[in-house]
Each structure stands twice: as structure tokens, then as C-alpha cells.
Length: 358
Image (cartoon, rainbow, N blue to C red; front, side, top):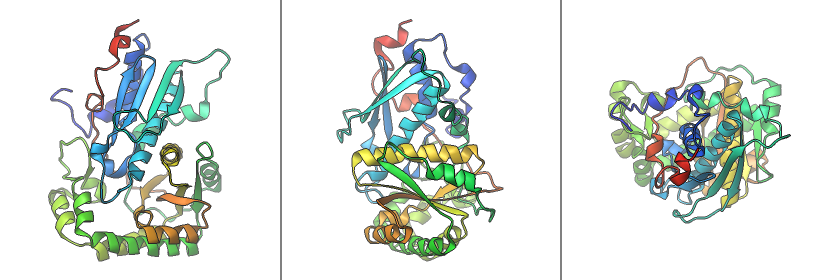
């Protein structure tokens, strides 16, 4: 990393034309990681680490970046790691590689959660054009917390999203029913009031709020939260010391109730399913971005056990809700969030002997 690295600009300047076609396997793997670090994560904690090893990439959970109050069971942390794995699948497809993922489901931070084998595409194995079409949206995908237009989401897109799944371990439900969405909005508001009344919850959130001019490589800027530059300077302090639950509840209730669609990712509660949810999340977000739609998260009622039970019932889900999002069109482009450079997320020397072998 050089002193010129700008966390809001440099990571998004990756150019597919710079892919090292004539480079070593390790160099090609390192290039794929420039896309993996753009994956979504809880409050942009980016809780992943990677090792470039002979034959591919190992993916680790970085438990040092967990949110102990917001995500005490590491459920959302593991989904973040799963999202990064799916991004690697898409990037590998774009550059003509076979990408075989083996999960270990280890809770040991010293062992990889996933091992990714990379290699040339086998003869007779056609490219996955649907997956390759998701490559461009990797750079454009951002959470949009602004109000959405009231325009309906085309049924063809909703059908495409509903049909996505992750190996039978996670699936998606989408609601455009105003009655259901109103009931969900009440759960979102209730969760806001409960969580923001808790000083330890507010402190956990405040750790990841950044001013708009931040040079830190993680967290959510005030701009991404809809704050101007002056307000962003006080964003972390305000989140820590002021209970804004009532104000936040009113705002989120309206955003949720007026959303053209609500999307729920559901699965059973176990590490394999959470990783699958993360892969499915990134798959859905890249499809939505490709189709010109925006998204933002309303995970609050999922994080409160009693409200999670009610959310499952209201939405008529067959499994537990893991993530709740609103989707729709917007005329306002969302702000970028800072990203860590690849050398900051690497474990050990990049590539070992493989990096320099041609």
C-alpha cells in the first residue's frame, strides 16, 4: 500500500483490463481479491482475511472485526464472508477460470472457512454467462438509504430474484403486499426503539461510523447515512450518547412501508446456512444492481429474538429470516464506503512459491 491510497477511490479504480493474463497463478488470484474486498458486510466491517496459496485462495473469518452486541453469534459476520466467496466466484468466471469452493465450516480463526481452487476452464465446460453478467455490478453495488421511487418493480425481475437459491440451504422471499409490508414496518420500528435504547448497542454501532473525509479503510461514512459533512463529524459521538430510537423508528417505518418490495433471505440457523445466505445475498444484490435497482437493509427485527419470531410469521417463511432488505428504484446515487486494500487482508506472504512460478 502506498501513501496515495484513498479508501474511497483507489479500491473502486480496479480495471479489468489490467488482469495479468500472462502472470503467475498467484498474481491472478491477487487480482481477483481486488474485487472480493468490495463485497457487502455488516456495517462495512469487512470481516475477512485471505491467503493466496498454490492452486487458489483460502478464505478466513476475521473475528477481530466482529460486532459483539449487534451480532453476538457471528451470524452476520459469517454471511459477510459468504458474500466475499460469491464475489470471487463471479470474478473468476469473468476471467475464464474454474472456481471450486470447499467449505470447512470451521469456527477456528486460524483455519480457513473456505478453500477456493482456481484453474483453467476444463475443455467442454461452457462459460456461465449468467454469472459473468454479474461482474460489472460488483463495482456499482452500494447500499442506498435514500427514499425509493414508488414505481413497481417489474414482475420479471421479482421472479428472477425469487428463483435464486444457494444449494438448497438458503432461499429468498419477496413481498410486494402492502398489508404485509406495513406489518413488517411496525416490527422494524419496534426494533429501532429497543436497540437504540441500549447504550451498549449504540456503542457497538458508533465504532463503525466515520466522518465523510475519513481515511480509515472500513466503516460507514456519514454521507452513506445521509449526513452532510458537518453532521458526519459528530456522527459517531451522537450514535454513542443519544437515544435516537423514536426518530429512527418513524423514519424507518415509512421507508419500509413505502418500499416497492421487501426481500427476506431465509435459512436454518447454522454456520453452513449462514455462509450460503451470504453467497445468496451477494448474488441477489448483483442481479438487482445489474437491473438498475437499489437496496438497503432493515435487519433490526432479525437481530431481536422475539421480533424475529414475529417476522417469520408475518412473512409466512418456511425457515428463519436472516436478512431483511427493501428494494426499489432511486434517482439518488448512493455514497461509496471505504475499503481496505488487498495487502491489508492477506494472511502470510502472498502466493508463496506459486506467486513467481510461470
